[in-house]
Image 1 (cartoon, helix red, strand yellow):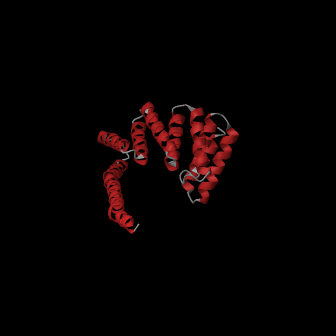
Image 2: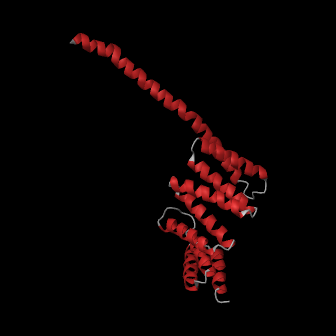
Image 3: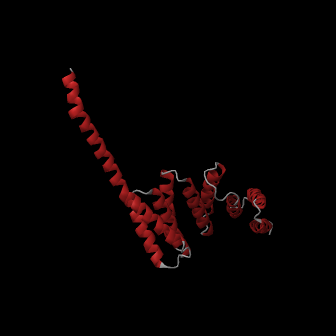
Length: 211
């Protein structure tokens, strides 16, 4: 019996240890390229977002290349940020169809990966874009989706701005009472945050309801 126990210690256990070490070594070396890629992607995004005028076509090229790199390693946050910046580029150029396309692609990624902050950005961007292009019903839908994230504490963005956006949507749809309610809520919250200039803009919007 002791002979068999010695055999186990001599042959089986070293084999197990060796297999475990190899497995860990594979996991570690496999993760290094992805980390390097993620770091490169994040650096690229910093460069892109430091050029928010989006006037330089080289920024678009960098964003598209960074999107491909993010997709290759399935880095969802990188993909969604690239979609956002590419959408912003086209929106800045008044190329609205292209902007919508990239915002929608980014929104789909953000929803799949539960990236709530990014979802709010895409809902906000799409709502504004559809509103200025006269698609008021769709703008309202996106505004309401953004509001849901805000009120469920899924994002820290647009805490009072969302109600102004909703009011603008209701106003264009001639839902004046709902517009007034949302304007007043937005102005009150802005004043509580000490943003008097923003509240002043909203009060100006309220004045336009009656003229």
